[in-house]
Image 1 (cartoon, rainbow, N blue to C red):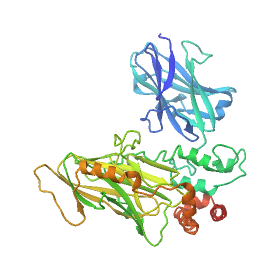
Image 2: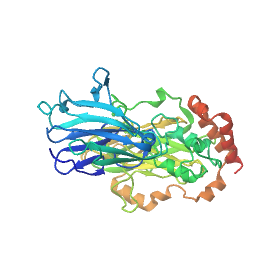
Image 3: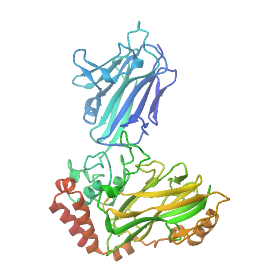
Image 4: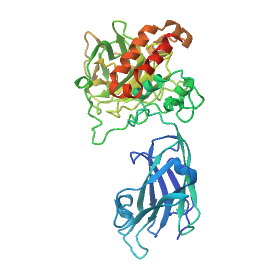
Length: 475
């Protein structure tokens, strides 16, 4: 029997030196390796016990003492007749594999056994899967046992650090609904243990302030990018089939000349912009928009972050509006080859009309491609995509009203001359505060709250929401 030597938890894998047992830690989807960072209360992880040999093994995972208040281990598919959690052992562990649970006044957890040592039908591979749940804030230690070495002392520990949950409405996403809940306690000064202002005083200093907003931002859009089971990532939903279109807000994709129909050559790249126009003094404090490609074989979007220390690449995705508290760019939700862009500036000023964000599109083949916009956040704007005619070197370029043909070489020079950072007016927070239309901001926040009344009204209540609005009107 080879001795179990666990070295480190790095990128979800607890490794052994001599080739016996490895513990792989995954996120809740069971496919993404856990990165070892702090996890929010309410997070689920999957611990997989695997081996690269077919030696008989028995061991366990246990939590002791006060750590039992912080986290919990769970197995799957209990057979009450045998006390075996049958869904927690894989076929590779053998027909006689077994997972049992027990607890006493000091510890609880799970025992795991492969088939009997005389049974040869277990093989190398994944043997057991155990679910882990983060219940309370703190550092939870899980003892890892190899019974061939010791029944009494763990050979090592897995440690998970839990932080306060930012998923405030418990829908497995950290998004604008949670942000609205945070706003409901903004500037609160009487937060105390154990409630800490409904968990919104994230640093537990007695106040809900900018520091808590920064901590909230660390998990912004957590869970949002996960594709739903059986969902076709290449099929974009039409938000206007579900949500009413607001004629006062328009999102569009345009080139630097403002055209929404352009012609470029195969293998050329071009910078495109997400543009916003609001009518009737419509005030916007948050935006979220996704761009998808009609035919991913004909073009690609660079959805990686622009690096100001290494212009003009390799990443090009940028949020352009100023005065933001947090933002996001990266792969799309409905189409991973696309791009999702969002930002919010609720306490430093409204988002102005103009360029919200930019990215680079590259032509991969001849033909027409449409870049389509998706938005499922209120307000539900009118969405206008862009048509790109992609031509080979011997093709005749298309021209017409509203069309533009700018080679990437000229586009790059144009960008350098204008300066992407100068496409919007960069102003300080103090200047933004001086220019904010407080009445318009309050009206916008009231409308935002009303959109999810079934959820938000139950959690906040009209009185608390009005107190938040009063704090904006009377800082």
